[in-house]
Image (tube, helix red, strand yellow):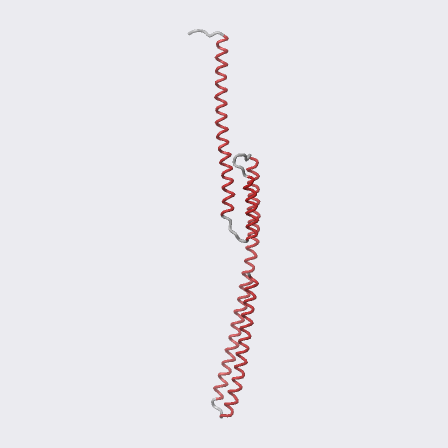
Length: 198
């Protein structure tokens, strides 16, 4: 085996060192390529998440939904999949959380209003049906009383029957008019309730 001279050994060392440097640079380039692929993938995920948040939004109130969509569109406008640094990913996440939080808060407010309106409507309808039931009971009592009067008149003489029938007919006419007025009032109340709830 030949002994290498010092200059030859130095050349071999420099060549080996250059080879190590080239391998190290190639390894770094591959790592950067992988990192770039990861950043692109992260940006794509951000875009998909924002688009999905927009697409699957439950629209409770048009004004609230429009405000939310506008915020999501502004966030989407900031996401550029080819040049989004890591700090921007955090900012995008923060903005998306803010938009979601505000939408949730507004949706809860709208739902609470709807619940209150529903409860008020239910109470109004309960009062209305109770009033209808009470009116019906009053009318039944009046009719039963007048039927009893007619039966008792049937045992009397002709003049008493004639006078009694005229009186009963008058009271029945009044009861019918009263029933019509009460029904008209209840229908008006119901229509007002329905209009107020729109």
